[in-house]
Length: 133
Image (cartoon, rainbow, N blue to C red; front, side, top):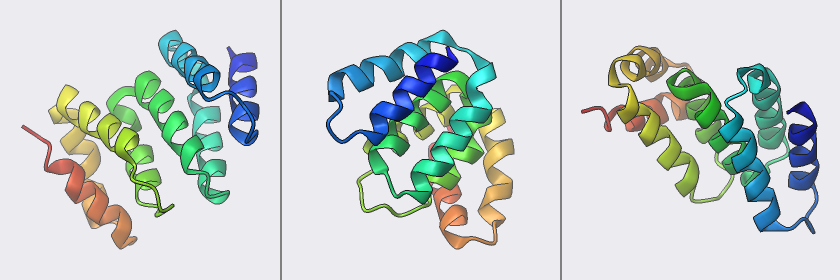
């Protein structure tokens, strides 16, 4: 599975990579449920943020959400708090789905983030908590 993740990150860096193929590969990795990929996914997401790659953030965020479940919320909220000038529709949907899938865990994970020193993170955590039932 790590070979697939390597291929995905290469495709995310290649402006000429086929979009459908890239999405299919991200979906395949997400469907694997391989929790061993989480540290590398988080690292690749951090790299995407540093490189201001909104497309990579969106796809990697979806894979992280699928594999990490609600435990990925802090990472996804922090990633979402970085303004890359995109609409974040996909990442926002992933966050909302995780919040609603396990409200108790989501509340426990998001509440501390509402007090984060980074106001962008705190505001994004407040936003996510609005979706708690």
